View 1 (cartoon, rainbow, N blue to C red):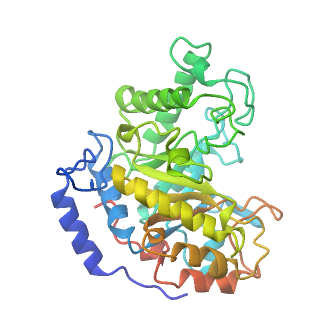
View 2 (cartoon, helix red, strand yellow; view 1 turned 60 degrees about the vertical axis):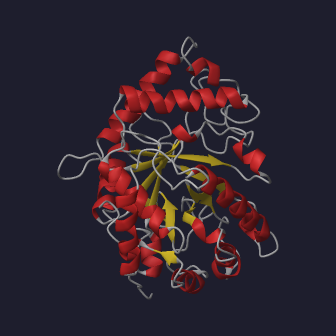
Length: 378
């Protein structure tokens, strides 16, 4: 492992960026590309600082992320601050992924206790890291899981059959987010990624279960409620599709610039082999064009190759895709899915054949782990 301090020039650029942007809306002079800025006019100062820092680093650095990294790994669970990536590489991921599925229960959809999740999220912040939350939300209308594709969107909206229950769940989510505070009692900024992979047909909010307009209405209703009724102005909102092949396909469900801060996608297709990785490169190029036009950040919000059978996968497939050109380098982070069990994992752990290759991948100047981050909340 070779640690590389982020250049002070990056931080000097950050200072200049912070003094030149209001941080309220993605606006620009006529004919100019809008600078990335938060969509919430009442965003907290720390949320603005985090977003500006991500925007500053994004052209030159991609942050490493891992789902449920602190909660468990291969052969262990529930340690105070441990990750498989640290055990294998010597440093933790910079971005820590979590999920709100089964909100209201003691444990989330993957068996992570919500009270421990809060503790780990605060610890990640204290060590300089970033937290991002998806939500595999149950189908409240059908009494099923997120994968129950019976229509639920209209039922969640005002006047719908489960609107009261839906608001109860949003209240619970707001209470959870409100518990993630620093030692001064300030709300810690987090990335919130609701209703992801809507361009696929496997979730009740997906393309087989609702129209684009219904999806947009639910997305806006959710964010408006969390901001206006619950005061959740520390949330950085990510819009995250599944794979796509055109700008129109990506934007089909887009709820609007006032509700999105990060334009992202999940990709379990392109990054499978060197031959298919060109698909991911093309998606990143499309997303660079779109995110630049809309004044947003971009990211690969989920990816991975289950059990990582290719021992050189990180340097033969992932790294060349991220370094393909100036557009692909603009991904703010890349998050590998969880290490759930010996037949379902996406990041290396001690003794796995990919460890040497992963170390080479992380030693590339493009990639950033936890200890290499500059102060992200100032």
